[in-house]
Image 1 (cartoon, rainbow, N blue to C red):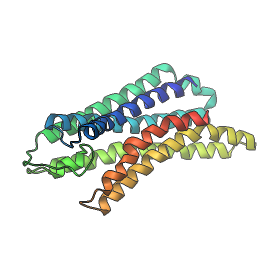
Image 2 (cartoon, rainbow, N blue to C red; image 1 turned 135 degrees about the vertical axis):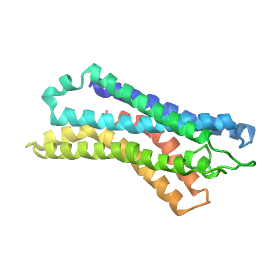
Image 3 (tube, rainbow, N blue to C red; image 1 turned 30 degrees about the horizontal axis):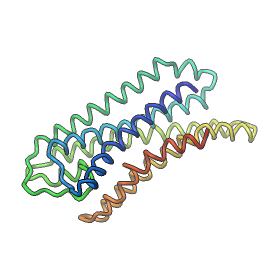
Image 4 (cartoon, one colour; image 1 turned 90 degrees about the horizontal axis):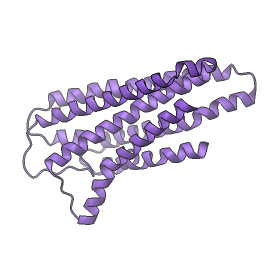
Length: 239
């Protein structure tokens, strides 16, 4: 269980930081009864939000691989998921997240903005900030689509592939008790991954279907606040 707990600790840390990025400023706004944020503060919040959102995504993919090895190759689990590989996978996840977030933030810094800006959101969301720019945003839009394909669809495809192999392996187990035991080891991760991608998809559909409204901001509370808070509870209840 050591690799799983190591990955779970990193996921918990990412969730705490992910939630703190937006909730802390939101609480300050409620306390001071103001909704203003400085330009530097907006860029900083956007950087850390993207960092921990991508990190959450990548860690869920690494955890799916961990469950794949545990169920499909149980005899080689301790050899494959050794401390060095676990540390390397987490380190690469942190590096990719940090570099991607830095690139997106630098792309925003090159834009020029008009005065009296209002973001229809409770935090500095990347797409909302780009839409307020007065200069050309073609490169920013292309970067968003590219990152969505590589860092969004890629990890999701990896998770789906892992669970396809897991289901095939579990179906080959003759006893019902063995199948239940195998599936129970994946239930927590599957619940968290489903909640993460389900709420993210819901936010995207809500934003796409309601331009100019605050429904996207309300829906985004699910994946920026509620989902990270539920993740530890889901893993706790399953133990």
